[in-house]
Length: 436
Length: 127
Image 1: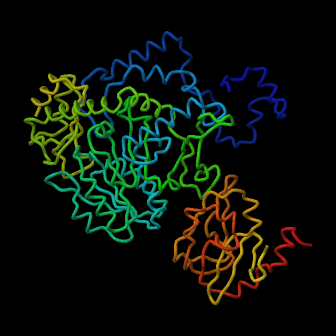
Image 2 (image 1 turned 180 degrees about the vertical axis):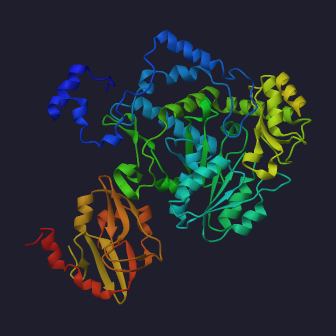
Image 3 (image 1 turned 45 degrees about the vertical axis):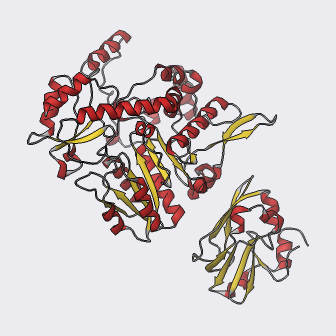
């Protein structure tokens, strides 16, 4: 379909068919006081040159090329050149709802590869074709747990990304899913397992934890899962930093894994579009939301791919569908697929090791707030200075600092969340250390 | 083909009552219309269901259909065999492939269901 404006003659033709003499005539039934009665106040058209010039000028205000120590759910990683080479192919870039087995074997193959690699990454047995992002994958996982257990309460750790919890609350208020939060240990920054156990009951459908958590601390998924399972609840493991899975043990003890793949060659782009994942055990496959691509055989017996188990989905099951999601994040997920293919298992491990090493170099000598083991993010005390003032100082040196935590955790208002990835150079890390 | 002592619905379920327990399934005609059955979704034991409300669903390679409860009651047993062998529903829908057993709360409801003869007339297998 081409989106071209109609010509004057086409307009008159259409008006004639409607029996209207003019555009004003067509809208004559509208009350006078809702009409604008003047042209919109927008400037005249600009030349292509002027437009390019305008955007260049605006782009100069961006902090392009500044080293960044900001993580908190969106991470600055290297993007292999191959990613855009593959993703910008017209077959991928311009296709819409690319699920027809008859014409979209290429896309379906990449989605199948994606699902396979997500399973390898998470230690799960089945993954869907992707979710919109990590934040919306979390309530989908919670609703899945509600369907599986027949219970309705959700327990979520306060160390799950605060904005993910906000999205969860938005979904939950219309789903009849009461949400309770449990705390973190103020020494380690990890889950408060005693608080979790105290809040568990036979009404809880899911316990939601994030690892590495919002403070960068690696959580004890095994212990959390054991507690949840003891009370008949499922464990949902959330991740925002996919690179960590290159080094950490896959969360096999979890029942559902929900996460964000932005770290895998998806540009930060002011917060999206990203791609989320949801993966689970095969026994829960009927309750997974969204698209699933399966391997099959075509009429000649050749290996082929198609959508499968679609009876879970809205276009067939209507109000009884597992979810409202009737699509996936195909193009963005493809970026992550290419990324995973380029790095491979060993490459991802090396990348994760670099992140770990850089973050620990950054942490060395800084006043750490928490004692728990961390991956590539850590909470640092600003010791009397406002975190915002530290960031101001760094910005003066053309460095983007960390996230002041007071906005999400009032008790940590004198603390900042700093992140270091493979992109951060030693010199810049030393500058950050000197700013505290 | 269609047992005399069963009562039937126009949605193609059957119920066979013994004391206050009713066994519920789908009919031979229903399984034939659905084709190869690949999945059966059953309620949990303890679920209370009213007559005419959804009890579960049956999925075939062609379609997915809701199963409506012919009578009101509480689910006391579900046929676990169907979770691993849904194809039994094609083989023996009036026998081993029953779906659930309900403790009937309103046995009089049985009277507003179709008799064996009426059901067969309804599906056009007997005039």
